[in-house]
Every structure is written in structure tokens, then in C-alpha cells.
Length: 125
Image (cartoon, rainbow, N blue to C red; front, side, top):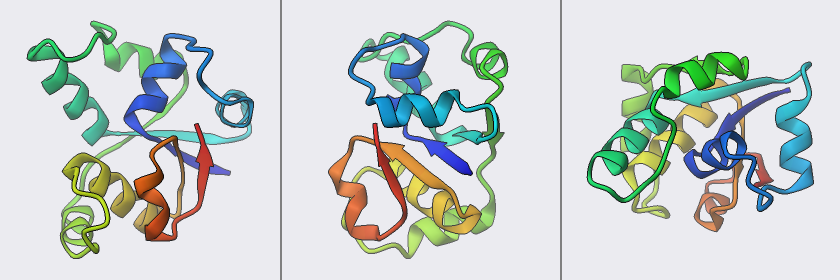
């Protein structure tokens, strides 16, 4: 299967946070699954880290490689899709994740209930 990690899910995985559900942990650890990390998550982490609102790895790119995650760039198609989504979620980073999941046919691993109204497949983080 193919999964897209929400930003908090990525950070929980990288810090081995016990908050992460067993279902999410098993999906991410399963070597047969493809796990994607969006460029929008890296962007969100960099912004929040720079203003002191978040503690995150200094070398996120290396952490993604070490964990065998796939980088998912932001394309013009993703941007257009995010722009026409219903306003269920106000966070632009999360709206981009929904658009990417929809276009790339990925299941999102998240704890955020605001993803649910979009109707994309979700695993609870």
C-alpha cells in the first residue's frame, strides 16, 4: 500500500513517540508499503522550527532517507487541487496533504479529525 504521513505523524515516528497507534506504527514499519513525506511537511517543519514552535531533527532530509521514506514534491497539479478543495480544513499545509493524497491515491496517516470530511482513506496516527 501507499501512505502519506501527516507532519505530526512523521515527527512522532522519528522521535519514537508512544502516542503513535499500533496500526500506524505497523503500516509505517512494513517494508512492503511505500511511505511518502510531502515537501509541504518539510516546509511546515522548517517554518515552525525557525520561529521556535517546534523541535525537529536538524537534518530532516537524512532522516527521511534513513527511514526509506519517499519524498513527494509539490506540483502545479497539487496546488490547483488544494485550491479547489472545500474549506473543511483551514490549515493550508494540511489542505495540500489532502490534495496530494487524492491525486496520488495515498492513504493519509493522521490523528487530525479535520481530514475526515474530505473522504480520503485515513489510518489513525
